[in-house]
Image (cartoon, rainbow, N blue to C red):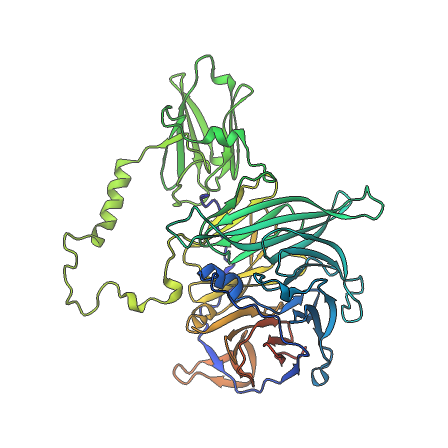
Length: 584
C-alpha cells in the first residue's frame, strides 16, 4: 500500500465554529409526481451476490441519472429495455418520460445480468451499459435536448463479465476524440479462501476515433485494470484522461496484465534485497530527515549531483542515478543541504515543510534504506504512552466513568481494518502519485458541481461535512475545499436508514433519503427577515439554518435520488417524484 505523501487543506474561512443547530421548518414543500408507463428495471441481488461489496455496488445502486449540463433532466432504464428521459420546465404541468434509446437485445433473456447504468461523459456523449457485459458509447446531439432526439450508437462491444459504469469523460487528444470509461465489477476470487471469496475489479477503458478509416470508427485504444478488496467510495477519471482518483477503505492498485505495462526497472531496483547492505541509513526529528550513505570507490565530491524539489529528490554520481524518487512528504527545498564527511560519508539533510509530521520512509516504495531510531525519541514516546498500559487487564472496573465505553461510539467513529485513503493514480505509470490518509474523515457522498470538472466528494471533519473539488491544474493542492455543511457530519450519523445522500450544485442545500418515504433537507444558514433573540443567551440571531422533512405518498422503496439547484428528483419502481426545494 502506498504511503501518504500529501494532505487535504481545510479553508478555515468556510467553517463556522459558532453554528448552533438546524431549526425544523414547517414550510410546505411542493411535491409532484408522474406515473411511469413501465416499471424501473430494478435488479435484485441474487443468492450468489451475498457479500457487503455486492450490496454496496449493486444493492444500493442509484437507478436515477442526471445530465450535469442540463441538471433538471434525469434518466432511468425501464423493464422494457428503454432509456427514459424526463425533464421539467413547469412543475405544475409535468410531462411523461420519453424514450431516447432502446437496447438492441432482449435483456430479460440474460439470467446473471446486473442493473443497466449510464454516465454522461460530456453534454453530447454518454457511456451506457446494459448490465450483460456490453458497453455502448452514445452520441446525444449538439442541441442537448434529448427529449426530441434519439440517441445514436457510435461504439458497442462485448467486454466479458457484467459491469456497471462508474464514470466517464470525453476529451480531445492530439486532434482525436477520446472517451474514457471506468467500469466496476465484483469477481470470484479462487485464491481468497479466508475472505469473502470475491474481489472488486475496475477496468479503465479508453476508446478513440480511428481517423484512418473513412467512417471514423471508434475502437478501444487501451484497457487497464485495478483490483482491490472493497468497492471504492469514489472513483473518477480526470477531465484530460491522464489520471484517476479513488477513495477506498482497503488498498487498491493496478494489476499487471497484457494491457497494463507495469514493468519498471527503477522500481525493481528499489525492492529490498535481504542479502545486501542498506544503500543508505536515515534518521528523523520533528523538523528534518537526515540520510547518510558511503561514497563508492572511484568517486569524489565533484562527482556528486543533487537536486531537490518539494516532492522529489535526485542524487546522481557523475551521470549515473544513485537514488531518486517521490518523497514521503513535502520538503522545504531551500532548507535542504548536503555535506561530505571524512571524504567518504555523504550526509543529506531534508527540511520538512510540515514540522512534526513523522515519515514512514524517505522515498515512497523504496526498500533500500534502513531507519535508525533515536533512543531519546523512543524513550519519550514510551513515557507518553505509559498511562495507557497496565500489568492488570482491568485495574479498576468499579470506576464511575471508565476511560472508554465502546457503546458510546458512533458508526463514523469506528475504524476499519485498513484506513480509508484517497489516491491519485498517474495514467502513464499507473502508480499512485498522491496519497492522502483520510483516517477518521468518513466519506459521505459525491456529486457534480461543475460539469467540466471531476465530481466533488464530501467528507466528515469533526461534526461538519466538507466538500472537496478535485482540480488537476493545481499540482500542489489537487483538492480544494469549496463548501461546508455545518454539523451535517454529525446529523447524518443518526439516520440509520439513509440510502442516498447528495446536495445542490450551488451548495444551497443538502438532502438525504431513507429507504422508504422520508426525505431530509438541510439548508445553508440564511438571514432572517424578522428580529430574533436566543432565549438562553439573549443574543441576536442573524441567520438560521433550516431543516425540512418530506414524506412521499408511497410505500415503494426509493430506487433513485438526484438534486438540482431548484428540485429534488426521487424515483420509485412505478413513480417519479419532483420536490420543489428552491425558487431561483
